[in-house]
Length: 131
Length: 447
Image (tube, rainbow over all chains, first blue to last red):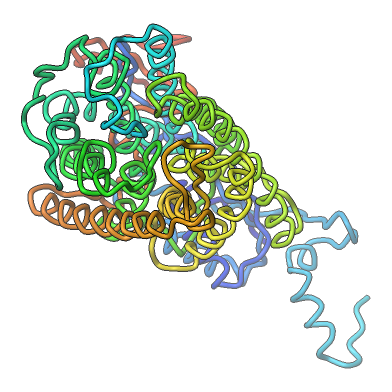
């Protein structure tokens, strides 16, 4: 299990969501953050005050995935977030020690597997019992 | 203009009561343009707030100057059928002497009419927000206010062919409402859709601005309609009161339609209904009875609601529905006069229901000619303008937002990470706030 953190441009957030959806990655958190990654600063003027905006708005995706979903997630973040200009963002992949789904108490792999997937997986093999 | 010129062939004296009211009414109408800016700004995404508002502010700047230079003259000089002359260019001969048939100083008449030209120009911006370059909008405003607005104003108010026929248009169904609505459709078609139109939900970012803007517009509209008799007489009082009645009826009907369609009454729908009602009564204000004004608000809301509901399903990104709210409502209002005008209330003419079918014909002509000219002229104007300058912001600029890319400002700036630059622009050696560079690497690294 890994935690994939992707920091992307806010205007590309929708494209990233679409790409993740296509890659069948479900379950994510999203927050607005401010950051700086080497892009050129914007200069803004408010009456006599000219300022250089050192921080840019970014959107931070946090996605906990099972190991086989790490690569599709990274690919989706890159595809959806790329504009080829400086400031497209970064992806960090971290090891994940433990995951608990609050509603059911499921842990780890079961907890990062989306509910509908787990259901269909359970429904298909007729007599497979889970401990 | 509602005054029959024949009655007052002699120059009439200035009436202090009329003048006092028209001074106030002019200020009320001018306020409508910033109110429109607020209304529009609430309807766009937060990154385009200032640009949207600034288009309305720009209309005040540009249209006032073009109106004084030549627009007023094209609209109100001479009795030519299609367009006025140059007699009043640069306010030539616009003095304290009243215009023929009015009882207020000519200069005040000019100022009142100027505020109409301003808001009409600002209205069109609703069709092109979130994507039209600010510079291109300035150029467009200058040309449109003279070549389209002044012509339509001449037709309806200034002695042009509709005016001479006896078409009734109290406060601007022809130049203001149909003029802006159908020009907006043309502008949306030429400028094209926003980058994300049809792919993403592009939602209003502040519904309170929208309601506040609509409320202020309604308030200003009492000057707009109530002042369009240019006096404090019966027609003005009728128009003033009808400006209360019609939008209220539109609001109630809109509530019902919202409830039927979505099972809930919406706030942005209510704000829209207020504007629809005000527009419906704009041409009819001083000509129809209060009872018919209520009916107009109720009936007229139906086609406008239909266009508001259906337009987003098309590929036409007429973003803030100027066509539905102004074009269609103005069209309905102009036609409605032809049915229900009543001499008993307006002192001028009856409509079809009171035995005068001819009035309806005059109204139909206006309802056909004004949209055709507004749409056609605006379409050609923007196509030509597009040959000399780019009209659209690039996709990249739209993605970052028009506030930052067009104006170098943000509406909701936090100040976090803002580094003070000296006025000459070469120093980042002063750092705002706590003296640290706001980014990870030191800003004023001496190395």
